[in-house]
Image (tube, rainbow over all chains, first blue to last red; front, side, top):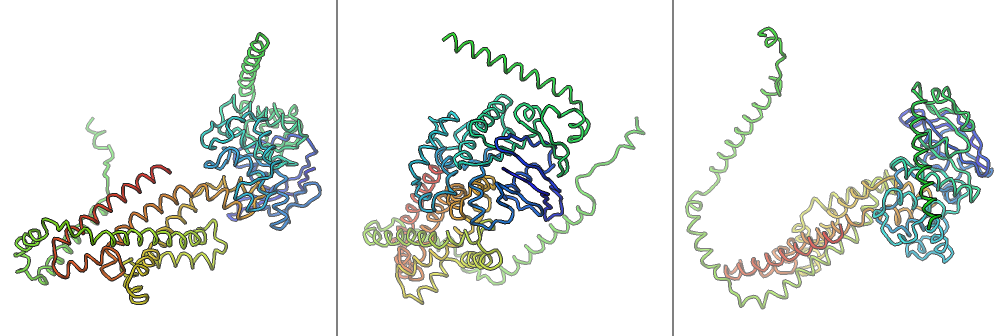
Length: 275
Length: 270
């Protein structure tokens, strides 16, 4: 599905953000990308859709080498790669619907998009997606009128409107509270399962990453230092990625969070069945 | 006790050197002021200045009460003035918008050729006052409203262009990145990511410039470019001070109204 070979990026300032990163993702796999700030997580996912131009290596999406596509071909490749951003990156002054429909920009011509005359199928699909993320009644609100969690849902709907083959997700929970973070992560993973979509989730919260991904890659100073299932992410591995820290205490705290949340859900289920 | 006091480090806001420099600076300012005063007194005809209260009194006496009946012949020129301001602003907007996109470092198609040209045009327009543009245009196009409209337009290009390109450069990169990631073309990125972000600023700038242009177009008549300034010029040259005072009142009223309108519009869009 997606194959990354020897990817490297050196910025003009001389900072080496990535060196020799290689891995494959099969269809339907949710990959958690963890690592300390500045490890190159954001650069890595931006190299995949070339918001950042990699210096060396290849990115192959279904055997199509994205790294040397020209402008027009790159646009066609980008529309098959949905991206969800840290702090949502919605166009604040457009409505929720316009933001979702902007996921179709790669498919419609300029005048159609300028006049907001999207094909009926695109509009029907946009409504379906808004319904899926639970924002049906907010379609005509301006994006800046929504709460953080709602905005991220719009971001998810926009990425899905592209009808993507791959999702790139950059710190989806960075500005959300713990509960909303879990809800958003759960929604993303559910959607990936429904559609058999592979996803790369760049995330700094180790516990969330372990809970929601099928596989974890740990980056440290631009290199892959861990690649394996979440169950193998031992304390030694975490120390290798982040440096020494008391990992048991952190996990215990997170377990308590998860337990509290499970309890809350059980309560809600009980109330629902009582009705 | 006294030992610790003696050892306590002495803190001063400025070093002795900076204090000396600041003193020297103030001294230079005083010297300059005295020198300028000397120059001024040397070249002033003091007889006229001593006479000023009498002259001012005389002028005010002739100016009041304003000649209210003269208003009939002011309405058309006033309408002309408004048209000069409004059409001139529109002309300025039409020219400034493409220039601003060429001049903004994040939207310019060519950083080394078109951007410097656009920046130069913006600076050139700003550096020349609209009265001077009008003087030039009256000698090219002859007197009349057209010269006034173009003069106002040419001066507005720089103002609107500069503020707009700064707004374009300050747009949020993440929103642009997000739209780019969907596979949008350059034109679509402009339409979906950049235009929505600068639109409120753009309306604000345009209305503000229109408000300034109402004031500027009122004096363009002084050099023959149409509008109420023509009447002002005519009345002043025949020393009809009661007409002049009425014209000034009319201009004041118009400016107050335009300022009110522009404040309302800006409030509504931001």
